[in-house]
Image 1 (cartoon, rainbow, N blue to C red):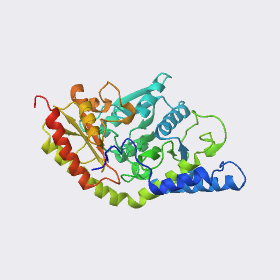
Image 2: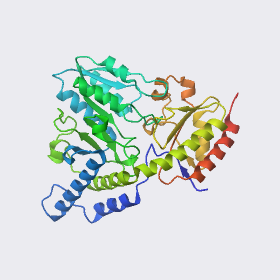
Image 3: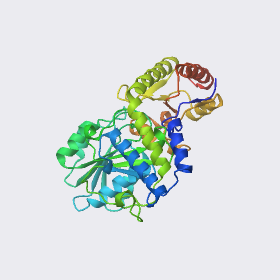
Length: 382
């Protein structure tokens, strides 16, 4: 069997239709979108069409969409911009211990500038409790930032309830939707968020493009980039026209295919979960058993060393991961798994499998056979 890619939470291949748009705007339609001539006008028109597609996908106005270089920049822009603009109201931020480092490290950086933070622990499934959020709120709280779905264990957070709470208390609410957008419904009014981050390369777009949704009338200021008047003075720098157009295309595709693709992926995911937990002694599913992304299955093993497992899988032509791609190579156990109460020595033995549009039932069956063989080779003291 040819190589198998089970690491779509790290990145995805560019969708063929997006690749066509990407190539077209790298070659023929190469104009600078701020130029007034024909080439510039064509680029500007394409950007605004892409902005409308992304806006439609999450149920907002196109004027509320800011294109960024990716999810990390969108998170930084959201949190820094909101914090600085509302400093006169308060200096307290609420987040969770299982956030992506783009959020956690941004919040921690702000604590060195006079802000304070409550970093809430999750339950054993990696889910934040709404009552804990409510208890953490003070009269100085200006922002709650909780991810929509966790990148390491796939758990979906109770954002609607948190959003309702934030609105009742008059607190701004941001979510990192990098892993959820394109896989499950992401409608900002349903979630109750004021700011939302998206990354193109997680949904079959190119790397280097993302989105920050900024609800109209949100008190926010540009703090990261200073330069020209691009993105309505909200994000300086020449727009990445090819990336933006490609992102618009994959956002449009996601809207049209999301429900059907989710149903297909859930079947594959559940077969993986059933096969691994039944066949591999000491294998434990991590993350919520039902409130999880349709393409995501993650595990910890009691008797199999994690790095050796990944190496053996790679030798057999199977790409998987132990967690977040941005922390690959770190000697520290996953901050997500340890926050969930998993002992460090077990957290090191983790496996994340994230499925995509090209994966098949045959690949899942083959993977389970290969994993069983590797487990027999690597298991110690079962």
